[in-house]
Image (cartoon, rainbow, N blue to C red; front, top):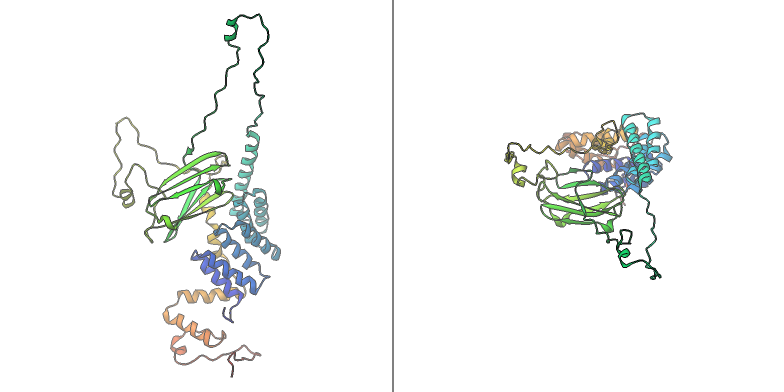
Length: 391
């Protein structure tokens, strides 16, 4: 660690790593910023966002809660706590966090998340009401034959007790549940939204062109989803993480840099034809047979009268860091970071050389001046520069 590292610069580096989707490295930088300055809510809420990307929702709730304690008016911290609690299935707590954040800074995203929490709370309440109750029936015990004057013909009457056939196990349900995907240049990330999925009861098979997920929904109903992928993957470098509300699949692209237009291909069409756009729509077998309707992505929640694009909401966390307006030293650090990222090679060389040679007291963008001679340390007025080198 450089002796000139400041919490502001560590946080700025974490923000850049977050944008580059290097979330584990971002967590380390945010942790360094917290180590250097533990009373700034910004660093905790930034680390909460990175934890959420890693599906560490419990850690995200902890960091967001700490940020709120340090700054009760931090609406962004309330937002991140709400999203993390929602992912953990704690809808009441999530709703409370969104309501608090909306009081501080009213906005449509807060109101949308509150409606989403209300929908989940209603769904849970409705499920609790209609949950079937199983009442144990007394088993029919065979009784000893009693003395009777009935004729043998009476034994075959319709009232005679007949054996009940044993129930047959139900086959696994096959189909889709609500899901979404996004991608980077090297990976495809698939979120399968299913509550109460037990990792120990789930089997995921990765193949170059397909992925098969078999599990039990709510630990009772067998469910299976076979994905016919848009492009090949590397099965040896794929993984999955589990949370109370979803399964997150991380699929390694076999061809890095190639963009997936969709997650799956139409099973009736060849993969290469659909991917390259060279296939034509197949003609119907019979003139009277209508063409199959395009699959419509289900809206959520289905009981809502207002149609909301939940996929856009899930991308809010990514945009927040870029939209945050820094203040104080952080704003100055952000300015220098923007100059460095947008500058040419000579500008970057000048900034790095001047900063390192001057002990962090000079930052120049003029390579024609800086490149000619060493940059001397120029401490602020009233301060004295001391060399760290031994005489």
